[in-house]
Image 1: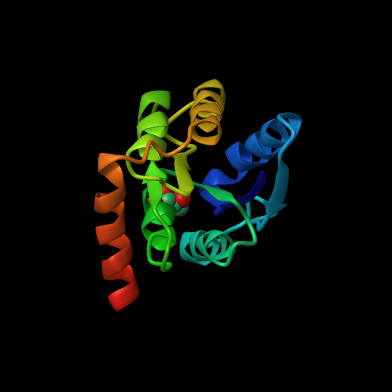
Image 2: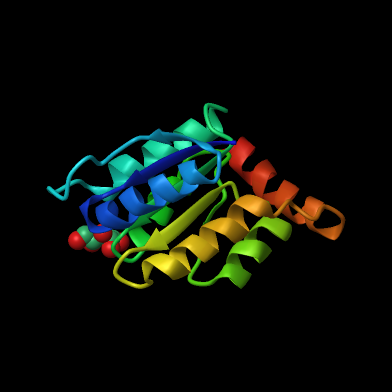
Length: 147
Ligand code: RB5
């Protein structure tokens, strides 16, 4: 898959480690920055990653900031983005199965690297379950489209 990745300065080091990890799993990474630990505002990067996914330039996105909160809020402002902030692999599996989440958000100041890798594995390897969840996700899409 093509995976768009982005972080602010608070998520820079985790994003760098996860970029290498995701590439080692055979995915193509589109790295949208930031490119150093210097100040970088999370809205710019969350929106850039969300837009890459919404436009179909990437199959899924991964965003990282200090908590994962700010950058997930920003990504979720992009029409068509369903960004899920996850702190464990169960949440990552369920956000794919139930919510068909297309962007994953992580907090560098909240979780360690190995846990983050497990979350990424679950997010990238799980398909949406369909069935009863389809109509619920469709209601979110309908609201999005009507804005
Ligand atoms: C940056 O200091 C920090 O506020 C940001 O990375 C994030 O945690 C915001 O939600």
